[in-house]
Amino acid sequence: MERFLNLKYLLFNNLLSRWLHLLPFTGVLITFLSITAGANELKEQEYNKADSIAFSKNYMVSAANPYAVRAGLEILKQGGTAADAAVAIQLVLNLVEPQSSGIGGGAFLLYYDGLNRELVTYDGRETAPEKTTQKLFINKNGVPLKFINAVVGGRAVGTPGTLALLETIHKHHGKVEWKDLFESSIRLSEGGFTVSKRLHDYLRGNYGNYLRTFKTARNFYFPGGQPIKNGDLLKNLSFAKTLKLLSKEGVKVFYEGSVADGIENTVKNSAVNPGLLSKSDLKKYRVIKRPPICHYYRKHKICGMGPPSSGAIAIGQILGMLENFNLSELGPKNTYSWHYISEASKLAFADRNKYVADPDFVKVPTQELLNSHYLKTRAKLISSKRSIFTPAPAGNPKPKISRIYSSDPGESRSGTSHISIIDQYGNAISMTTTIEGPFGSQLMTNGFLLNNELTDFSFAPSRDGRLIANRVEPLKRPRSSMSPTMVFDNDDNLKLVIGSPGGARIIGYVVKTLIAVIDWNLDIQSAINLGHVVNRNGNTEIEFSTDAMKFANRLESLGHKIKIRKLNSGLHGILVTNDTITGGADPRREGVAQGN
Ligand code: GLU
Image 1: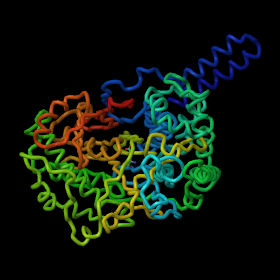
Image 2: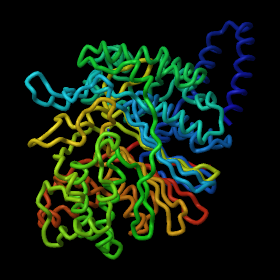
Image 3: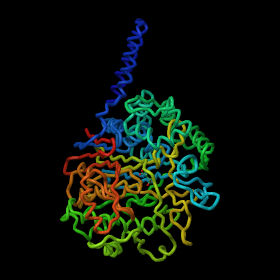
Image 4: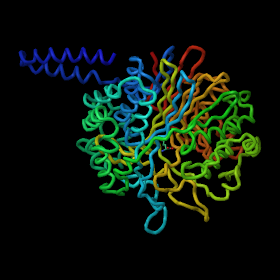
């Protein structure tokens, strides 16, 4: 369809330029310019403001921005696979939602091959540069840096993995030619896209204040000193140039060529916190194919991303403990449902903070943490009378390992995006993609922003004489909370594709949606909409301005320390029932779900 439109547009362009020769009226030129711009414009109402439920028989995309969803649908319409669509979607997201994800960052991806009924996971997480030491975030006086001082500039930039990941899935699972996957992103970068309210709000808020202290980003996002406004048409010609190079030469230009030069120079010469990332790090970067982590919950198989993500283990532990409580009978309106969910989450975070890190560097006791006897013992700590005192201590799933490590909760900001796709062949993708904090490190090169993912490491290497599993080490991948997830029913048929941004709260957002679908039988959109109650082994956070606020007093009387706040998930999900594919997108952000 897009090719067809482009062809028509080219013919029209050609004819018009001949007429322009004959007609020296500027009025014609003005009309022409607005026609070309119009092709890329998006009306405000196309952004998700409420529910975005969509039904389809063949394929579906749910992602954070309507431009990106459109780009994915164009590819699926041409007969492309979920892998092809993911490439096109990610490239457009980089342009239109630059605060959240892009080729300067990293990602985790679950790929379900519908024909062979096989699930694999790809780890495109950033790595610490080879020259990094464990003192990366320790100041001259031996004290860990303040989080915000570590985020900005080159210090926290890890070697980006997203492009290598896209290339890998395209090679293994793609059908459409690589260069054709760049059409939408190049057209939008060159012709401009309508800036969304969310991007504008970020630019004019606190995050924008950091961003504007960095020259390249300031010149681009704050022309004349003012943030780009929503509704403005924004072009990104440097990014268009990068995209064209990538489309013609492949990702080598990013990992070894001129783009690599730009990355190295930008990180090294950052005015604040110059960093260590070098061309040799980029050249050495490798995507890792890892087995999915799967566990059973009420006859469903829940699969996700294993370490270095803590997502699948924590979700598996929470649900494993909740098997011991009858949530479906209690239902979503009963305070006890939320009490048990919060308590299980508290205990899972205690283990996560102590045991989960990059498995190529530390021994993660994954099987022991997910063992049903262990989880039964942990569930026995949950009482209907009184909330567990926080922070709850970690359990002891494997004494040899328990003795080595000390806990560290880590801190992360929230600049991430989630993409869910099902194609017409029955393949599916669940991909969570990030540059870490909003606008990442704030450093921009070749039209895109670089991540600050290394702040997902523990800043201190040890505590109370014990090592911290998630401490900084050269070439290590920082622990993540990203939780791209797929659910299979009792007959092993794909039932649900889901994930969200939101820092460590991602785990709670995904758990709630899984319970809402599996225990409470909600449709995907209602499951996403349901108010959040999240506990990361601290306060019980309740989503402001939702029905969940009704549980606050009762939870408090059970001993929960309550905090009511906005909880800005970005859940994008697809549910398969009989022969219908239903997509849902989080009304808390701007994404949409759309099928054919
Ligand atoms: N960097 C975080 C992680 O990998 C994600 C941040 C977010 O979700 O916004 O866990």
